[in-house]
Amino acid sequence: IRDRRGHPFAAQVTATPLTIAGTVTAVITSTVDVSHRMAALADLTHQVSHDGLTGLRNRTSFTGAIDAHLARLAASTGAGATVVLLDLEDFQAHNRAYGLDLIRAAAAALREVAHTGDVLARFSGDSFAVWCGHHAEVEQATAYADELRAAISRPIDAGGASVVIRSAAGR
Image (tube, rainbow, N blue to C red; front, side, top):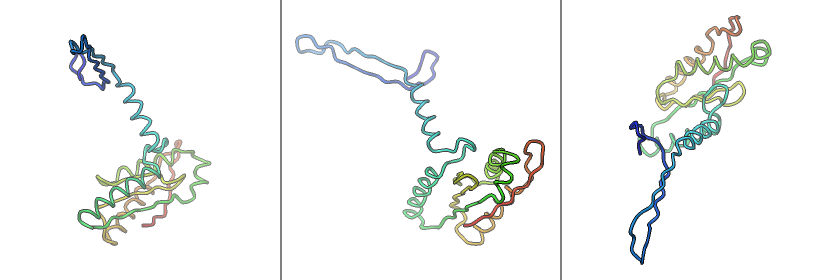
């Protein structure tokens, strides 16, 4: 359905037949714009599945996405995949001094180097996870984990100070 300007919108349409002497003589319709409801539902769905600080997926959404990807891989090629877990080292000391800007910066650094199709998540307070379907070989996975760690290890501007965060990666 489109509005007067030709823009599409979500609508709830109800049609009720008008019957006179057993014969449908007309149909009474009612159309209600539910675009705001649909937008609110999309927003709530995003909030439930994503971390509010970084905008990355949360743990539950990440594991659901992995399940779906693995099911597709098993049904098609049988190829492998890689999950890289990154833990920020000495985060508590940095957090006290610089706040949550470091978490946001780490997430931004991961987004910059992530490949199309990768699934990124803030797994817990100072841990991130990256699912990658295109690095099934150990050497490729290790090189990619090193690339992700290097991205996080670049100096970050936190409140006017240049801070370097180290991270440990497992795959």
